[in-house]
Amino acid sequence: MCGGVYYSHKGQDIRVYFPNPKAMLPVRQKDGEIRLLPWGRRSKQAGRLPRGGWARLDSIYSGRWERWFPVPVKIPVKSFMEKDIEGHSHWYDLTKGKWLQGLVARDQYEQRVYVVTIEPEMEDAVHNRWPRIKS
Image (tube, rainbow, N blue to C red; front, side, top):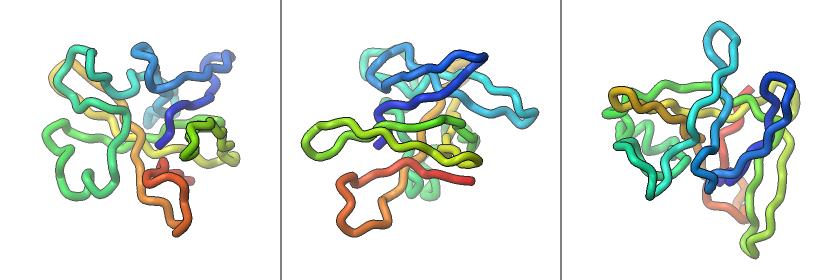
């Protein structure tokens, strides 16, 4: 489900995990600039946006995110982390030109980014949700 990401920002390599309440994700703006936004919302964090750091693609299509004015965005990362069924972390590199699809949600002045997830295409997949990788 993408519990961590590794990216570069302003010449610095950053590795961040969703449980960190200060976790930020890079979002590519239309002008090409990269802006850091808070990654989702944790249970104990103030705000009205959905808890969690992920948005299921089918829930986006069904309209569940509409009240938060969703905007699709590119999340340029070098790699992302998933845990297997035994709880071991595995990092997956993205090839050049690929990025994670994100969704920026907002409620008045609150704005957060969520990683869009899909059901894996492989029948024997270990995970029931996988980040949507685009190019």
